[in-house]
Image 1 (spheres, helix red, strand yellow):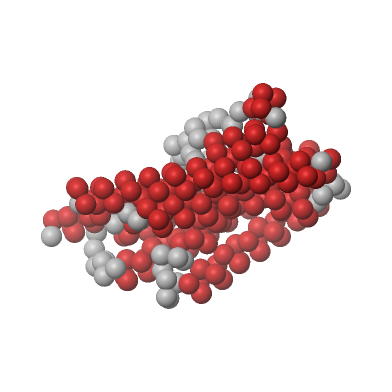
Image 2 (spheres, each protein chain N blue to C red):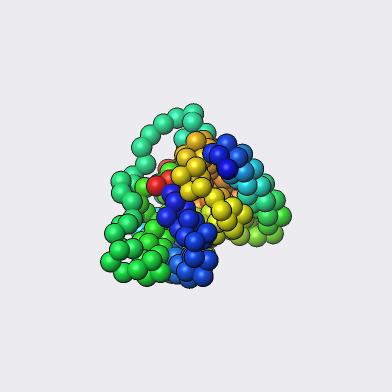
Length: 52
Length: 214
């Protein structure tokens, strides 16, 4: 498997992670605004995948 | 890169060994994340009760910081993050074995700020901890941040069990803008959530400096 297949897979997974986090956040926001901070934290963590 | 390059190749040669290592990595990281998050929350509470820190770093200020981080991650502005310019110690694997080293790597990286940062999200969470001043909430927030960091180690070895690790690491480096943009979207979301928190807490929407005068 070459790098391009991984690139496409990684992008797709990341989009799903962000969409899922936003969906959870939007569901929580009206009732538990502090809990709505958690999806952002999860996405920040996931986004560290590009780090060293 | 959250040890994706170090831990995922192990999954295809020694599945049980990989599983033990990744569990140790995740649990140890969770422990240090909870400790750091709890301490930051405690610091926030102390600052708020002793020096009225809430007036200075309230939810309104938090939304402003979150917008700056969003602009950075979306590439609109550029500034260096205060970070430790180092990776965790790879030599631990030779000295202590892979499972123990994984736990040590997890504990080291899980503290959040001991290695390179690729986005300002972690620092934004520090601001959240200081603004909220609730140790339990911030401990859980930092644990969530850590679980987000540890997820690729679990996921990538599971969906690509026979992956070519060099190509995978290369693909992660090439897709880096995608992760930065994701962090930008998360910062925007954090701005909205912080604003909602401020409204719920009954904070009026004035500049923090004006609130100090009032």
